[in-house]
Amino acid sequence: MKYGVTIPQVEIGRDPAPVRALAQRAEALGYDYLMLYDHVLGADMDIHKDWRPRNGAPPIYTRDDLFHEPLVLYGYLAAVTEQIGLATGVIILPQRQTALLAKQAAEVDVLSGGRLRLGFGTGWNELEYQGLGMNFHDRGKRSEEQIAVLRMLWTQPSVSFKGQWHELDGVGINPLPDQQPIPIWLGGAADAVLDRVARLADGWYPPSSLPEERLRDSIATLHACATRAGRNPASIGIEGIVRLRDRTMDECIDNVLMWQRLGASRVTFNTESPIMWNRLGGNRPDRENAGMSHQQRLERIAEFKQRVDAL
Image (cartoon, rainbow, N blue to C red; front, side, top):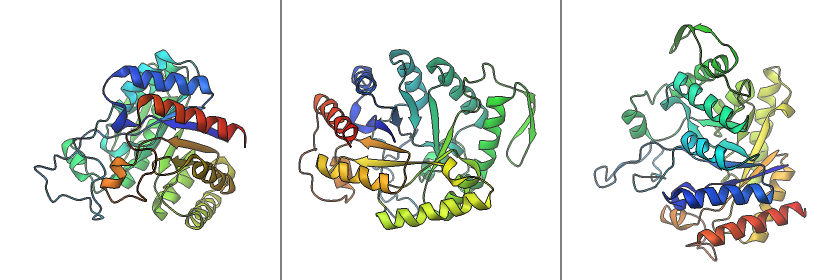
């Protein structure tokens, strides 16, 4: 099993020094990859007072939550690290221009020596789509065509393609990435997403909030979809998330063991404090992780790595 650590977007701050220190410390500890989330625009809740995502849940992030742009930040971190992987979990694919994303990702892959892994999702923030001039309502199906176009642009010097949303007439990007193609993982839990993962993706990000039996059922569905698509289910990676937010370290290790039982190939350690989650009606009151300092976070990722190395 490979282990990664999340860069806590909303808590790390705008100063690049703590981001650099976290990345370098994670690499020195032997973590396999860094994980980074994505949002471009957040709603101003003073203006959108009653706004909610379509599922009625509170908006997870707003304009008050800081997000570094993933590919720009990874271009920077590629220069200050040597071997740790650079993963996104997830970039909201359908709200980005496909050819431009292909170009940006290829550049990060070149600068990092082939260390990029792209996780994609379809997102929940309709206001973000609106602000970026993209259609929120066709995002799932459009993302499938985007994946096909991305892989062509990453592996062919000249691409001609005509689909429902894209038309490329003898064009290409230069430089091509070191990895041809860059690995693509998808997040989500709906049956349509599992089918998309089975047909198109190198790996799957399951929701960390689901109980073990639900996760087991979803994995069985994923494997059945893969078999129908003519793929070996074992070729599709599964990445679990272990959230420190309101757990003791012993509970975090129990969570790692759950992901091992489920056959996950990777586990990401997320050190975001529960302050944000509590304001959204999160789990239990925090016992030890609220208001974590930068130094404490470095200590926690060291402790977690020491514990999983001993398993």
